[in-house]
Image: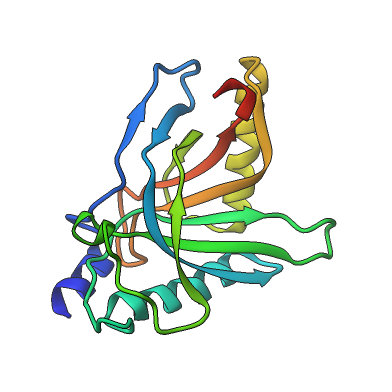
Length: 192
């Protein structure tokens, strides 16, 4: 328990999903291809990304603390991702899927969740354009960084999927410096 709480508080020594980085086309983003992996996930509907992330994080943290069929403690990993499917209009709810990467030792047979809102997600190979930024991220920063990434991709003549998109965070709220946040845009299927 102390190790898990320490990892959450200080974000050190966390496992990350493996990816291959492609040669950069622009200086302000990178291209990554993630291997097929399993994630523990939960879906939340709402108007605000931060509120959905908070709700989703609590559900998933309970899972890794042993609220699963095996009562197994599962190591914290990074990043925490959120798949964002924007609503049809400005006053419409969006769909958020918050996810923790399942560590290598549980990839083959992850513990089954107890809660009906929590599920094991089998992600296929995924190629994304990634923009990294620092600081304490919020809804406005995520939106600004997403727009900057889209502008960069347009500038470079790159085809991409506008929505859905991902946001990713690597640090606990208690880490004060050298914070790492990302926005991910999916590579257009025709180009993959």
